[in-house]
Length: 285
Image 1 (cartoon, rainbow, N blue to C red):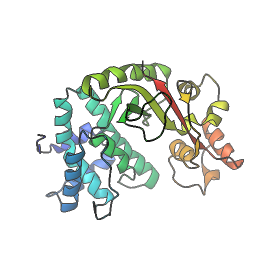
Image 2 (cartoon, rainbow, N blue to C red):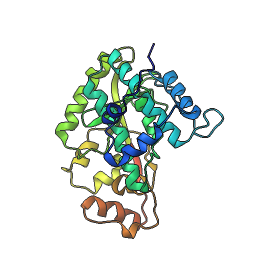
Image 3 (cartoon, rainbow, N blue to C red):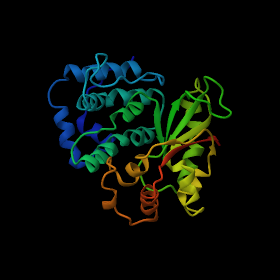
């Protein structure tokens, strides 16, 4: 049974890597008793913790009538219970900190995108707070069962979805170290869900990107780790959002062209092309 451990606010904000400019917003959410909507989020998180197939309800629905702020408050108040669950599984404290740091990172991204406190990517953080996703060095790994066909993966088999947090470059040494750590980590802490394959769905795997970049660039070398499968899908805004951290597509001419990647992203769009999300898989070391 996971206890409702008392919240140590400063320690929790440290674990979540919340920047100074976002701490007041967090403290305001934690001011006073837990409201009924945040309590509904806590109930969901407790019920879903350790259940990677638990669906996340949409906010504002009869199933979970809460807002973005309610999700953030609930997650903040859930930190001690999540730390306790990690400790019960003997997950190293460094992994816990690295995983939860994505909370502060996404608050900072939201401030850059929208100029305010908040997190429009809160749904992504539900993976961290229900024990589905872990950061191991440079990469994050989402333990899941794929819903579409992946070469060499049987129905019902567990795999790891690779995600790349905004945390520096994609040097091959830290990527290799992370991939080498993934298999042993999940075999140790989740032996009932064996994994041997990882997949990645990203605009970084768009064949156009590797085809128009130096083959020795970190992005090209990262993409080359994966065996492509499936048909890339059109996602016109992904390259713009992850390169420039803007949701809009109306003022592209005002965006900077200070790097080769900036120019490549914008030139393809101005030339009438559409960026895509590519699919790739690899066998874990």
